[in-house]
Figure 1 (cartoon, rainbow, N blue to C red):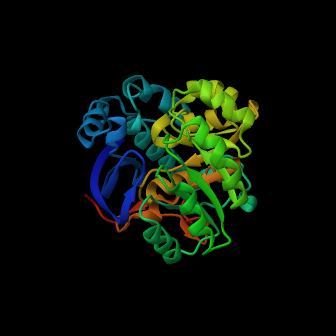
Figure 2: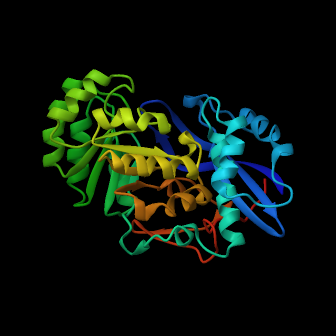
Figure 3: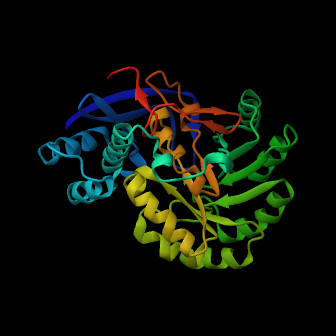
Length: 340
């Protein structure tokens, strides 16, 4: 098996602002694994907020070249177990890219999409939202008008959050979700929740700081809207704790280390009665094509990253008014069309 690492700077269609940062370009790393003429692809984005740099990911991946399978392909679960010994420290973004590339390769060698290999029914898939990043109210309204969609995720954490939702609601009857990215207090959340519910908001994602467990315990009991964990749910070990404090969890492949641990987190969350969401970073179609394979297992999905960037590097799934259209190829269906 051969490992190839490609790096790109993906231009964002608009400046993307959340509580933690603003950016116009998203550096991303693509892992390509080749085996007997077939290639599998996975992705990880540079994310300074989590201490993830391109240099660090490349160093991690170069360190495992000699440990890659050379004769037979082990099952992806076994491959992840082997690679996680070297790549699970800190935030396992590089491990995610490697794991997704391997699952993609595995599916392509079996000439089946991953959802087919897993025996999943894609006929009732949830639709994805489209994210509106923080900006002035006028700009947020214009972004929404530019992309007509049935479901929007609105990034909040300003001094006029309710006014933003009121202004957006005047322009559409779409369902809203809001993501405060840890910017609110308990009191703000309890004050905002009834107003947001009346404005057609479906749930609130991560309103409090990730370690404010007492506050989130109160919100779970008192909020009129469901509360979904994001920053509080990073890896498998977080799921059980989140079940006590949240109504659901948002799993991100890059944060947990790929498809393999995400599948376990989904099952664990289901067993604990949690609503299950999978989210994305601002990533290319390669990353979003991996998320698409999990859709039948989810209640909610946020996989609009490939719509937020100017993706000229990859192909795979397509998104039509929130609905995912799968590629014909096996694995995740992703392919790299520009090499970096």
